[in-house]
Each structure stands twice: as C-alpha cells, then as structure tokens.
Image 1 (cartoon, rainbow, N blue to C red):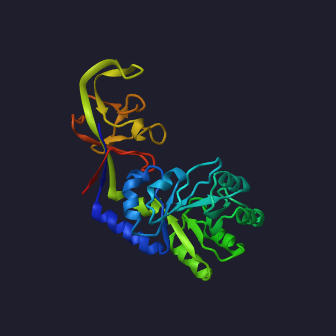
Image 2: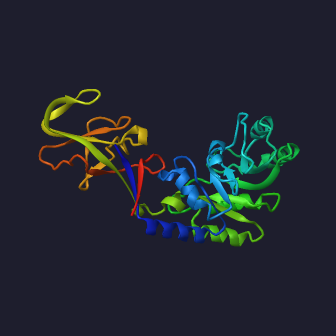
Image 3: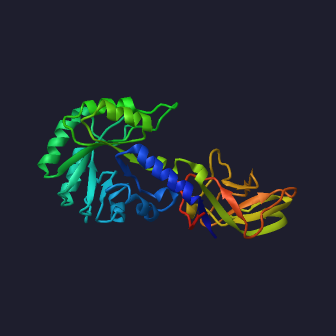
Length: 315
C-alpha cells in the first residue's frame, strides 16, 4: 500500500529558486500537510530562503528551528502553553490579545488586517484600539499582515492591498500573499518607504504541477467477476475486473469534482466501485479494457494540499 509522490528534482529546485528571486523579500509558508511534501521536507528547503518561516498554527511552530522565526498565521483564541520563543503570533481582535495574555505570552505579534475575503482580521476603524491593546499587553508589534482573496479573472487584489497600506499609521513591515510578481513589484514601487514581504506557499512549492506526480500501487486484481462487491456490496456487471488500489481517505485521497474517480490508468479514468476507504480503493475495469496488474502504479488526481504521501521519489 503506497501513495507515492514523484518529483523532478532539478526542475522543482529551479522553480523554487526562481520564485524566491522573483518575490524578493520572502517568507516561505510551510503549513498543514506541507503541500504534499510534508512540513519536515519543506522546512529543510525554507531555512535557506529566509530567517522567517510562516506556519499555519502555533502547534506547527515547533517545526521551525530556533535559528529562525516562526510566523504563525492563525490566531490563538484559547489559552495555549507553551508558546515557542521564536514564534511571531497573529492577532486580529481584542479576543486574540486576551487569549495570549491568558497564555502568559509576552513576545512579538503581527496585527492581522481584514480583507474582502472577510476572514479574521481588524477593520480600519478597529486598528487604533487593537494597536493600543497590543501595546498595553506588553507585546512587541513587529508588523501587519493581510490575506486577500485568490486572484480572479487573471486579476489579483493588489489595489485592495495598496489601499490598505495607505491607511496604516506607521511604516512597520506588511506581510502580503496571493499577488502576481508584477503586481508585487508595482506595490513596492508605489510604497517605497514600506517593507512589503511576500508570503508564499502554493506558488512557491507547487507553481508548476508538471514537476510532480501522484500515484498509487495496485494491491490486487480480481478478473471476470460478477455479482456484488465492496463495503456496501455494490452490483457488478458480469465479466468486469475489480482492481484494488493502495490509497484512500487515510492519505487524503477522495472523489474529485462531481463525485468522479481520482484514479487514472493509461490516460483513462478508472470507475470507482464505491468511494475510497481508509487505506484502499476499489475500481471496476470493463472486460474489453486493459486492467492494471498487481504492483503497477496508477495515477492519482488529487489536490496536493490535501494528501499525505507514503514516499517521495526524487528523479
């Protein structure tokens, strides 16, 4: 049972290096499942790009070595202890500050600003009060952070970010994300007195999906079966084959799109007998089509931000 990620090493390393140069002032993001690579693998690459590495939660901050700062993107809302001393935490409301005070925290924070995405973050009117609350709590305010929505219709949200920057009361650094490199350059040119730091994960690690490939091995093949099979004994056309694939929901592998199978063999989509289960999935191959054999690998169509692979094959 193996879900395998194959990576063209030289192409991937070249892409990551090129993106790092294009972004300039960069904080690489290493969070969640590590974009399919695992956080441990990506931290190894990120430490050479910046003295700061962004992580999703305070629980992930321990992945970052003490030689580097861990920029925690998600605020804490309940008391948490201990908090790594190299962590820079995010606050977007008074409740976030209160939770850090209750945790005994006394370190550095970024103030998160609300964007049109309408996730957590302070509005323009809330900035003065939140800034004062941060100061009164004894925290060191080291910058601002904004997360705009994803680009739409080939346009990003640089004007929104630019308008937000213009309203800020000081010249502390601002951390931004999801901007095209040309828009980032224009934004920096328009605000020469401001340090604008690009925060990137998906574009940095997965910008060119042709460099990576997911696949899973075939555990068993039952030829020319009939009747029913699977957890729920789904009916089978007579003479078809059942192929058992070594990947399932434990890997984060599930149906895609409109309940379609994520598995492909010889450039055709394999039909699921039923939805994937923990460590295996069952597909049906019609009698007039070539079925994969035990030990073969089939392609897996799945978002890289969702999967946990068993092995990485660098080629």
